[in-house]
Image (cartoon, rainbow, N blue to C red; front, side, top):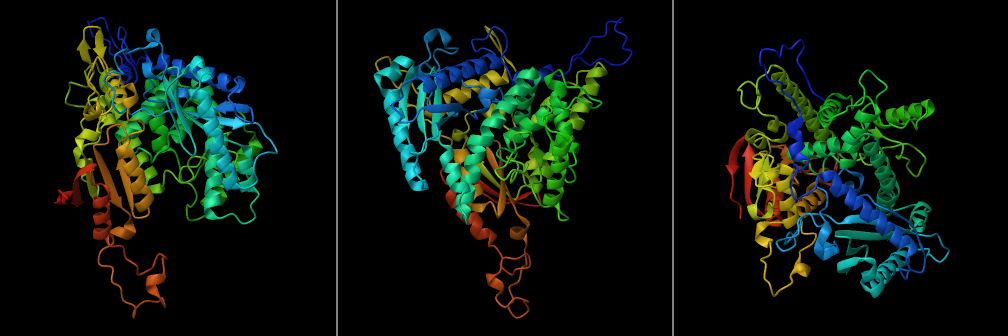
Length: 580
């Protein structure tokens, strides 16, 4: 899309300005670079997945049951991954297919996740009838599969690199990529669904298995079809995820929700607005949808292929009204797509049942409206013939992907991560690098620099090259200390606080206390309490108060070794710091 001002007279030497090309530097490389375009990297990975799935279905793997189907849920295999995987020589890539031949010599702890493989075995009456025995059988099958991968037949088929077996997954290399295979069977879901009085753990396990293996594969195919039909949708999703990370919403606004909103933007062409043709227009429409949609009063129905009938839409609206009720309960972001069929036969959100919660959705919507207004002002400056990045009237487009230092002062606590754990400072939320470096072969875009840094890992763990040593097997895989730490904090203290961070460059973790924790002056007086045992109650009017200082002390001890500074804020000012 090229935006032109109305009735512009270009005869007087006025220079024509094109808007939106700047976003390409965040998503792709430039011509002439050794690293191929992101789309080509994704296509290579998808081709490797197709080969691998065909191999598992046809080869004699030694499993007692044949592999019925092979599915995946990796975003890069549906064109949604912000940073596609790069083939590596130690994982089986041939020399002609290596985009960066010397990458393995420098890599220490890559930040790339293994591509997922879900192997569904054929139905059989030989499956055990209880969950512990079924888990033991799955583990035995993984060991048998590992023997095939490491055997002569597996090496001839193209498997390479180390093979690691755990109780639930098998990690190995094939065609230059790292893979993580999991085995599942419908028998497990049947056992969990047949329980008369399932425990909370059993119900959570059933939902997890259904979301991961059943709904996950359907969502993967649904999103991939959208990205194939509208090529700009894939890049729009990647740019939207870049925006989500930049505003420290990593893990709080699910990628699946972003993908479905982008599918709504491109697939909902029955109204006044037609489907966008460019990433710039798609990203603008995404921000407008996130910021201005009535999340309280309406469900977001995503159906680009027209699978839902009018009866289905009426049923969705009925379920939504019952879930909302009069107190705005239910999932805050109520997104429904054709693959959201729950085991009970009702249409309910799969990926937005618990995330984002209301406070996160409110924050994300407000940020989207601000970004949308800024994008409008920046575009208007382009149409006026001025350079918005040089004029003082409008700040640069890079402000869309940055948090101001003043925004960090609004958190209650800041956990400053040691810089050695930040492998890609160019993707920082506060001081990101958006310029293009000039090289002999062309300009190095921010995407190019970030992808190489993520493949190499943190500088302190990068290897030194020695001619007489082969250190390919000395890689540290799955090393994500900050992401794992945030997941642990959310699991332990999620009912007390919210934890915001940027997974691409986790320089700081922002902590917001929930209202019950932030209350001061809460007096415990049993005589004046309406409760017989006020301390045993957890109701809204309970007299139980959380010791904020004690919680912060626990967090301070838990984050030691990763966080170098804990800063406590009050009304935008630093109260205490340097807790070691």
